[in-house]
Amino acid sequence: MSEDWRCFDVANVCGIEGTRCRRVVPPTMYARPQQAVQTVPLQRIERRFRQPVCCSARDALVPLSIMEATFGGADHQLNRSEPLMHKRLVHFTFVALLLGASTLHAGENFPVISTPCPFGECQASISFTYLGDFVIPTGSMEYGIEFGGISGIEFDAASGRYIAISDDRSEKGPARFYELDIDVSHDGLKGVRVNKHVAFLNAEGDAFSKAEVDPEAIRISPDGIYWSSEGGANPMSPPSVQVASRSGEFIRQFSLPAQFFPTADKAHGVRENLSFENLAVAPSGDVFVGTEAALFQDGDVASLTKGSLARIIRYDGSTGTPKAQYIYPVSPIPQAPDSADGANDNGASDMIALNDRYLLVVERNFSQGFGNNIKVFMIDVEGATDVSNITSLAHAAERVVPVRKSQVLDLRAIGLTPDNIEGIAVGKAMDGSDVLILAADNNFSKRQKSQFFAFKIDLPKMER
Image (tube, one colour):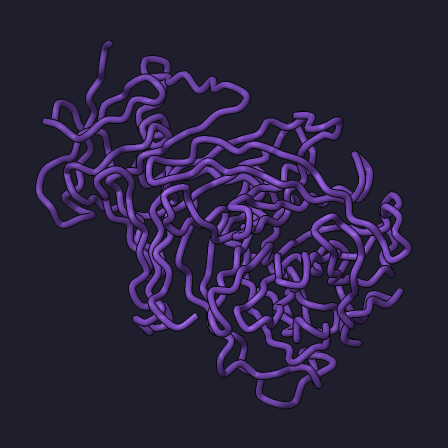
């Protein structure tokens, strides 16, 4: 098997004399740095990342995607063909991208992404070790219904399996959730198997009609399955949080604060398709429900220069009664599209509670010509202003303190190419370790993927 070693100069950026080397090899083969034979300008690597880069230890592993971007061309073209259903274990670059407080270390098998002190509080220390990804191809049929639209995922401790909600508006099949087996351990993510699907039923005991609901997020609580809907085909349909049995029967529905009801003039309430994307259940039983972007009366959606003020409702889970509302500051869009009129956005797509105070929130960006950018933030609701009595943040006279947020993971920055990530779960691997699972909504599109990422997660050492 032929191998072609290449190197680049790191002296000016890293303050280290000399070069570091790579080699171009066939897919699934990964290279460790060896002795220099040729220099590749650092500028070519920086163009790949659109920012300065730096090197770490000589024995760190190098991803093929960066080799290809750096040394591409007719003489060094890599074979990118992959099987339809596949598993990739991507070893990262020895180029460390320092974004926020997160750092990338080369571990024995996989790198560790660590944030020692989110918000400057070391009790909230968290780290992730990448274990791989798995794709179920668009068009796959499972028990007579097309699999896809995964917009939320949750670990079921009782069975050791996962449940995942589809945002199919009863068009491909009934509004539903799936039961999944996810084969993951310290050796990596081996596969995802669909065991069954369960249809949600309305209060009358019937399956939801076409476009009646838009399922988005899902969690498990002792009294049932909590799931959110962004509304329906009618823009005047309000969002909801419902409780169902494990077999899908309707149990009850949470009450909705007045600020969230939409109006025909689009001056008030949730924006269509930007409402209840986020759902989390805390150990106390409190339930957090978040919008993807600001309510109409609270301000604009995110842009390249400004963020958006999303709201989080804190419920008493046992009664479905609101206890408080907080502001979550969605970040500005991190990446411009490739044309002035190209599509781009950024919003909060899911969240999960670590305890009654700290949560993890996924921010999902899409920019035309670039793709998706996925970041995970830890947030702290303690000390945030309760805005339950504020009708409009845009016209609020009082001081408002949003939740604190600290970035703990950036998938692009560590060499991954995520799709439309909309689900997050913390579960158990087969070896008993804690794992973070991220799931992508393929929108039932051939251009997108039902993609699953797995990370070993070291959770904060604090009372949960």
